[in-house]
Length: 192
Length: 308
Image (tube, rainbow over all chains, first blue to last red; front, side, top):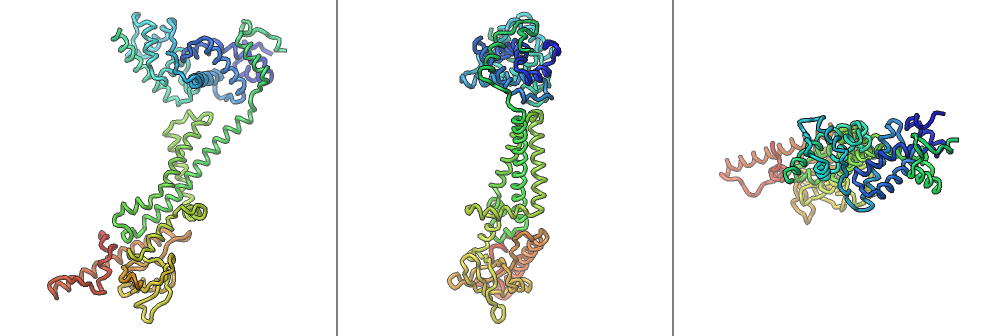
């Protein structure tokens, strides 16, 4: 038997169905990624994020047989994480607490600009604070796709699987999201 | 045994991993059965199929009503075609059809890969399937059977046949629905019994064509168009007789033929009335206010509503 580190997600899933202790490898493989993801989705409190994370993995385990092998496991687990974050807001009856953009994320936003330089141009003056402020004002549906595309580095097909929207809608939302983000950034700078 | 492995991804088992594993063991949680998820997925598809079938059934009734309405003698019953359309509009079935398309869309979106299909694509395909099903069901007269069948289950529901019966059983409006009870000595006056109140009407057949009179004398259920000359003594003046065309064996050609006959009959009455008026003008200089019996039918509402 090969070591879990060299196994694919799908192989580990099939192992978990035979031996539940393998599940810890799933948890450890995705723990950090999903922690960052739920924080980016607006759960800023560390304890809350940990609780949500635990709930995500618990649900993943319970629903392992629902995993569609035609999807990537990563997309499937991100979808559960996304849904769980939304459930968290609903349960708490609160809005997402702004969107967390670390200073380190600024370079990722520049990537957005590189993809379509006519739409977004970042210079050094546009710091993380401006970006965070602009992103926090962005509509949820645009924010979600931009986070997945530029922060989680997901392909269009993966974003489609995670958010359960047609691939065409992913492209449209990314394009419109970037346009709106640019406008928000411009507006923010005018007010500074 | 793998349970002894405490490290993976080249690092110690995380606190979170330990907490999750502890909770799984403590609560003795097992992954839900694969069959459960398969059943859920299939039930959604079954629900989708049900909505398409229900949509097809609704459309079959809409087609049945629309088909009858196409050849209805609406000039005999309504002042304006729009009033007729609004009255017969199968709102319930149209609502059901639209609701089923919406539900079909929701169901497809709830399937595992439903999100990949566009809204327009799902709605279009659901409509196409329901339309194809509806046309096939209509071909086998299912629309008629549903419309009539529901009245037996839901007394408040009025089928299209009941609607037509209702509007043709209004002697005060110049419409009678019934069968021959007794033919007079020379067929000028016959007795017709209506089916709702079982009233007996004396019907003047002076202006009826030969074929109309034959139809009336056949004893079949017929629609008689004319005017009431005496409501107290139940005397009716007939201007046209048309067969009662309801049932699963009525075909479109027959309905079309009857509509053409109705238009022809109304035209004949109008022409006759104008001829009488022309003669009156020539003889008396003015048209008479006391229309004699040969011009009664030219004055009925249906003739005036016709656009030739």
